[in-house]
Length: 326
Image (cartoon, rainbow, N blue to C red; front, side, top):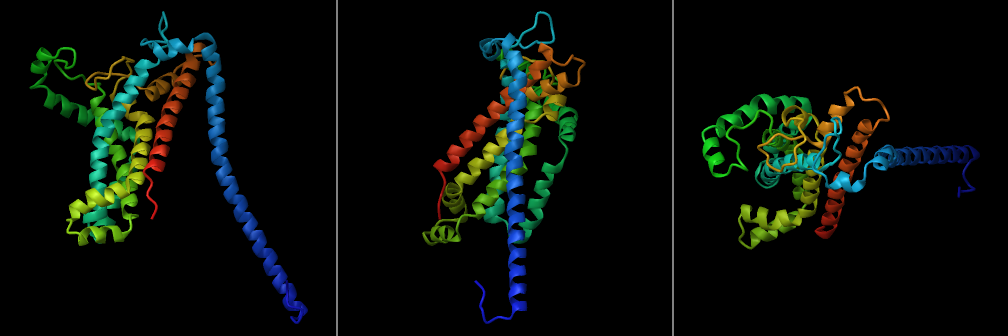
């Protein structure tokens, strides 16, 4: 309400400013709403396409066969429609990547958060995050032309011995296409993601907790491992889940270096195909639209989305379970 003692020109100017401010606030709210709605709408559209296209596939192939059969050969005669070989390849490369990325990312985050100086952190962290900007196709050729030959060279002296003792686990020679090399490179690729988010979570821990630990006589390493790390476990677990989701959805590295043979195996020394690699393989082919072979890519994509969704749900409940409030 305006002051009646003000001149009419002042009242008009005040009213105009108020209307302009309200319009600006409305526009900002509209932009924010559209941004949030577009994310939700995109997710709904993706799920609609995958489910609607997969319905035709599951009308002809039973869900039981799709989920339990170990024969995935939809492009051959007789065809097989068991998704387990692709799932095993996807999970194996993801596990190898996590064995590399989780320790490296966590150690890097602890060092940057608790031990590195501010000047060193400003230099090292951007350099580390540059790894996330390298195209994945470059990582794929790096895995095929450098990491895999290096693994073959390291494996050659012990291959005959291990194969003689454990013939079902270790081949005599490491194949040029295997899941170990791409898994290692995938781990290097997602290390910056895990380290960056984990480091942000640890730096968000109040300084009072560190000072209290130091006052009790704890060293910097003891404080980092027993105070800061448990206090930031919510954000760190979220970083791990994001890394898993990133590794599960990786395409070019496994398509180039892991091979395209859908074999049901969890042995990282063997060649296998992943869900994303199969989708790339079929999408570039000449299969007619609407055929059962073409519909397999949507069924595989729906499986991949469900696997990623499961990991995200697990990460959500872990974050809520271990969330710290300061």
